[in-house]
Image (cartoon, rainbow, N blue to C red; front, side, top):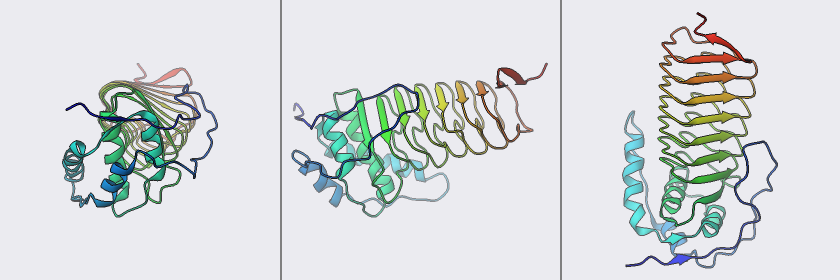
Amino acid sequence: MKQKIVPGVKASSRFGRYAPETEQPARTLISREGLEEVLALWASFKVKLDSHDGLLQSSFVRYSGELEPMLPALDSDAIERVSIVLEPLENSEYKFAMFMNNLIDKSPDRDFIVHTTHLDALPDYLCFANRKRVKIIGDVGFFTAAEMVRGVVEIMGSCKSFTGVDMQGGVIAVRGNAGESVGDDMNEGEIILYGGATKLLGTRMHGGSILSHLPVGEDVGSRMEGGRIELRSDYGSLAKDIEGGQIFHKGERIYPLE
């Protein structure tokens, strides 16, 4: 059966370049017309993730798979409105990502805006396995753009930890501080940090590139095997267990030295 595409209200701005810019805060008076099915499902869909080591992500993926066939196909402007009007609920930091990720995947559009500035709990796993172009206005939690395949994720705020973990392709641009363990276990793709990061940048990195315009913390490149890290500002320290790849500081290669 052909899916019905629910139109939205045209957004005031769409996807921009990767240079720093100022965004207006999320609007408070948003029409809910055409969103009734999604909002009812948001209230009724129950999530109880297994938070034991190694099981959280698989539990998140399982619940996301159960949710996907229940959601309608919306256009990008309707999805932006959904991101603003969802009310905080139990486990909403995971549910928000489940709803946004599935809605974006099912939409026929390519460019999206998601608002997080109004949320009580920062969303984890937002843009998981992303394949499209998403601008996130606000801060995010853990594992943003984990296992990203292609496309662009532009984060206007800051991140907690593990942004771009196991990244397979595409571009991630972070305007605020990107937190700890950015690009952990990444294989391909490009990460651009305009606001720096904390410790363990590029941990277990196999390929791809990370560029930071502002300072980063200690242990850059821990267990790094491949890829390229470029630091255009200060850094705390290089890790002692780097195995491969290249690291540059202000245009000079600092690993390997020979």
